[in-house]
Every structure is written in C-alpha cells, then in structure tokens.
Amino acid sequence: MAEEERSFRAPKGTNDVLPPDSHRWQSTMRLAMDVFGRSGYEPVETPTFEHTEVFERGVGATSEVVGKQMYTFVDRGGRSLTLRPEGTAPVVRAVLEHSLQRGALPLKLAYAGPMFRQERPQKGRYRQFWQVGIEALGSDSPVVDAEVIEVGMRFLGEAGVTPELLLNSIGHPDDSCRGGYLDVLRSFLRERTDDMAEDDRERVDTNPLRTFDSKERATVAVMKEAPVITDHLCSDCAAHFGEVRTLLDGIGVTYVLEPRLVRGLDYYTRTTFEFLAGGLGSQNAVGGGGRYDGLAESLGGEPLPGIGFALGVDRILLASEDEGAASSGVDVYVVAVGEGAAGEAFRLVTDLRRAGLGADLDLAARSMKGQMKQASSSGARWAAILGEKELASGTVTLKDLETSDQRELPRDEVVGAVLA
Ligand code: HAM
Image (cartoon, rainbow, N blue to C red; front, side, top):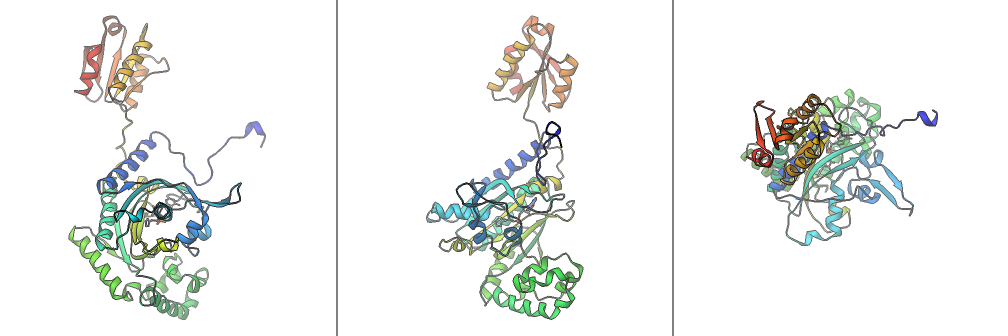
C-alpha cells in the first residue's frame, strides 16, 4: 500500500470506546467502584505491566492464560515484562511489596482497569478488555467468601444484569483433598482416553481438571460420568464450603452448585464461582473468582489467604438491560444567536460551570434551529436561549427540554433557577 494511502486501524481485538457508548462504559466502572466502596473495599491501582514471573508464578505456568495468551516483551534493559492478563497476582504482589498484610486484616481492595490476553477475538472476547474486581486478603472466614459473592451479585444487579451464580469448591492441593481427587480423576480418564477428543488427551496428565472445560462433544460425554471434586473434599474444606452455602442461603443469594466448574487460573483453592449472563453467546461468563489461599506464598510471601472476583466490563455492557441509562453530564445547553451572542454565551456557560453545573454551548456558529437540535442531542435538561430579544434586554429564556415549558429570566437568575 502506498504510504499516503495508509490508514491506521486499532490492533485486532481492541476497542475504541467512543461517545455515546463511552458514557455507559464509564458510569458502569464508576458504579462498580462505588458499590465496592460502600462495602469497605478501597481502590488500588497497580501498573499495567509487571515482571513476567509475577504471572508465571502467581497465575501458574500450566494455565492457558500464561502458556498461550500473555503479551510478553523484553524491554530495552533486557527485562521480561508482561502486560497484565489479570489483576489478582499484581494486587497480591503490591500488598507483599508494601507489607500491607502487617496492618489490619482483612485488607479489602478494589480495582478497575484494562487487562490484556492474546485470545482469538469474538463477541465478548477481546485482546484488551476491562475488568472491575475486588480482593479480600488475610482471612479464610467463610463470611468473607459470602460477602465477596454478594458484592458481585449486588453490583451486577445495579448494573442491569441478572446473573446466574455457579458455585463450587475445589478444596486445597494436598493429597488429603484435591491431590487425592486428581489421582482418582486421572485413573478414570486414563481408562476412558480412547473415548475422548484427541486434543484433550494430553491434558489427562498435565492438567486433568481442565478436561471439564472441553467443548468437544466426545470429551463432554466422558466428563459427565467423571468423579467430581465435591465428593472428595477433606473435612475442613467440606465444612468451609457448607458454611459459605449456609451464609448465602441466609441472605437469599441463590446459586447453582456446579461441581464441574473449574476456573482457568491455577491459583484457586476452596470456593470458586462464576457469574453467567444471557445474550452473550459462548462468552457467557460476565465474571468469576474464588479463593487463592496459596497465592501469596507462590509469590514469595508468608501465607495470606485471599478471595476475590473480576468482572468483564465489556461483557456487562453487552448483557445489561439498562441500555439508555447514561447521561452526558450536561445539564444546560446555551443557545445563542445575534450580535455579541458568542461572548455572552461563553460568559453564561462559565457561570453555570463555576456553580458546579454541567453546561455546554455551540462553537460552530449554527443557526438557532441547529443549536436547539444540538441542545436536545446533548442530553441536557435545559436550553438557555440568548436570542436578539434576550441580548437586548439582559435576559435569558430558559426552556425545560422535557416539558417544553419556558420562561424569560434576568441573566443573573439563571444559575439559581436551574439549581432550584
Ligand atoms: P477470569 O475468569 O480470567 O478471572 O476473568 C474474569 C472476567 O473477565 C471473565 O469472566 C470475563 O467477563 C472477563 N474476561 C476475561 N477474558 C476476557 C476477554 N478476553 N475479553 C473480554 N472479557 C474477558 C480473573 O481474571 C481473576 N483475576 C478473577 C479473580 C479475582 N479471582 C480472584 N480474584
């Protein structure tokens, strides 16, 4: 292609978030941080890239995310860095680095930001996507599990999504619990390898739990008969899971027990869950999470139990019923035509903004009709009109764009009238 003909496109699998959709997008992120904050989760920001090892050791080398999807690069100083594919390992890294675990526990933290995974793009699956999430660190109480799940359900409800909650416990890694179960599962799968899809066979030895995630019909049929983790939990993990369920029952949060739910990241222990929503096709998980009681140790820290979730903002917006809810932030649109109108309009818009109101004005010398059209598409409740008559008499006509009522006021009463 000739140089002058070249036009640029955003990289495959990324999205530009543009008005008007950007309003809904931003208000969803704000709502998340607001709901999380009201439950005691404080905001944290971590870098968008980390040393690659944080994910290799934190998320786990056998996970697809680490094995196949990371954007890893060597910087000019020869360091291997990775654009974060998820937020949990970075948050735990930051907590350990700054010794926050020495303060009051549990630490309750919330975040919102872009994540990066080199997946095959499709509806609801992108290479840069946005997550909002919370992490509670330093307690293994089942009350924390129930709280985290309830916060996720409540936020999704407020964001206009009615999710189905899938709940499971995958125990802890020792032989007395998940380790023992994996032996049982492996023996079962070895007997049935010939019945499984070819692509899934190698997982039997490397990561047998992931065979539950297979979409291949032959494998799915085998997995229906496979032993499930919840029949093999140690007594502590079984009791813990029982308490989580009782607490959720007690606050009326409904869930579906799904003993075949396996999460894609290696750090999980005990309670795991996913939030599913309709209308998303095959990418129907709007979020997921669980406990990761061993993650801090994998990152070189002391034992620090934790639980959290992350929700995909892109998928929430696809799934939410609340299509029109976002407002532009403009309360008053100033419409002005005639001699000296531009200067007067600018003064009025500045007065309105200084009073804390959202205000905008025409900057393209449109006709009165054109400006009124702009006023209604701006989402403003009011049009403040400065026509020849108003300019001559020092007044403004304030029009309520919802009811079409209008009245003429002295210029210095406009701010008060809008605020009233
Ligand atoms: P995850 O299940 O990998 O968990 O991702 C959580 C959510 O992020 C998914 O349910 C989905 O909504 C969204 N998501 C993931 N990948 C993509 C993608 N390629 N495009 C669009 N959306 C996507 C985690 O990331 C864990 N850190 C959750 C967690 C927090 N567990 C404990 N604490």
